Length: 170
Length: 181
Image (cartoon, rainbow over all chains, first blue to last red):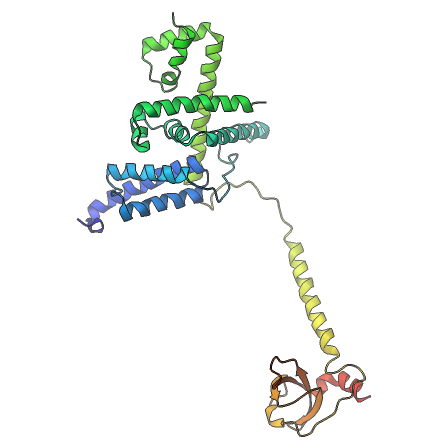
């Protein structure tokens, strides 16, 4: 059946699911490239590719394909716009203690910088597992790796990240 | 009793909350006794917490519309100054143009030869008008519609065509006086 011929009663939940998926993919892309406009562009491009020659976005295989495509595009992304500064987006900005808020923003900016220096697979595994909070099976599906390989990437990424931050600490 | 190597081998499972109760109890006993391992585990726990916080920041960036983004207050610009500068520049341009036109159609002292045969039919209005003449090498006074006009040649890229501006003689009386001397 043609993709555009779905009945309205079926199209509504499908559209809602796609909207939800789109939102999650934008969040994932922001976690990897830290610019919303670039993230939107990458996700739109992934959906365009999915429509052109990928599996349908509204089935599980297509969703995994979209996740993987967005991840790959983000890892290959050459930054055009600057990364969003973090200070305006952190938990409880501590308006009563601007110095503490600034220190926290600097710490997290340093962590973000360290994360970006990791090898691509380690970085992606950490983002999907520790920030996106996906389980190892799902991460393995998205990264197209075995679960044990993902566990190894997460382990190495955590260790390397801790080392980088310890080196960077004054 | 668990040693440091065994404890550290469980670091990832501990961070992922994947240890069962007995494994957690064993690990807790070791961490209570080993300061180095306790420090390592706590630093990794803090790192996980920071990654989560970073993820929440990314969520806020992702859901915020461009207009709603809580940008830091931009340094306040003085909007009045550029406007004043623009007005001053406009006045200066108008004044310069008026000054330039003041001396036209000729330099002071330069004679102007009136040519009565200049085609008057092309000068229909009293207002400034652009006409083309076969030849108008210099400023001339002509009769048109019963009034005197100054014909001012303007540079043209085509040597066979001279573009001129016709002025009501009254509006350039000052120039006329100068050239009549």
